[in-house]
Image 1 (tube, rainbow, N blue to C red):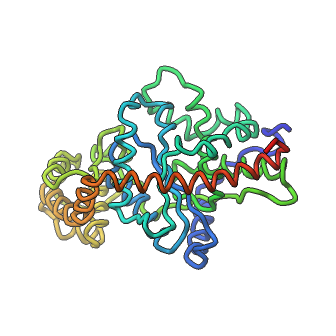
Image 2: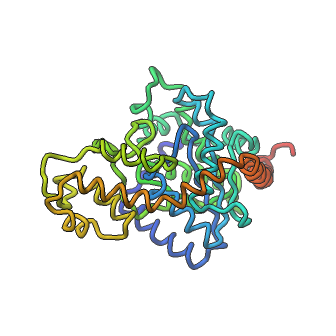
Length: 363
């Protein structure tokens, strides 16, 4: 089969992805038990407020509807471009703490948190999936290109090259229907959709194994980093970590980039750095960014930063208190992870058996 010519990967327009996402969101609200969500993060450092507003908050809302939610801590994927393997276990535990402190409830019976290195059944899916995509298709994946450019690697390793296929295994092992993502991750979703279609068509056209998953986009726009130059990112050190103390938060915000104009106005195109701080202030205070700008007026950047500090600290005070409580109970966190691993392995075993049966392999 010539994958490139007969069934090429289609990187849909963003408008089409948004439309599908809104339709999916409506169906999840109306039929929560029909869906399964897969989401997660790499354990490379502290989660920050960009993660919270961009994805964590949405995950909590979905899980509270009763949707079965798998949260993968993508520890194997850390090895593709980071020299932080000595901290993977510590970062894994901290991620789980952040998830639970943010409102995800593993005690609900529908939220399962696990590191994917602990689920061999999931990782076995990578091999058959690699045979369903071509090298040129992987080379054209725009997200991989961006990740390679932003990494410190002198040359690309095979792990990074096949990163989107590993993500496809993460998504398809539990037959996820909805994947909360940002705009930059949509190409990975499209490749996963292609792999699911190709597997179904080649091995199980009469009774498809895999649903075709869809990206679920956040309503929160991409949050700029406090340096004003790029999106908020752990690797760029331009964030406010969820675990930051109130004094640390104040110091970080004090150093945030604004501009030389004293009058505070909300003009995202002309004054992106100031607009970004106003948007963060809006998310934490509930006031519209335009109203906050009018309230501050000639108070300048100093007053804007003071307003932002006050409202961020008030907003995240309960989360930080819960986080401190969980940090003192690592035994509980490990228990939650082990429960998640057991569920993921059970689900993964059933999927792998279906896959091997469809490919006529010995069971």
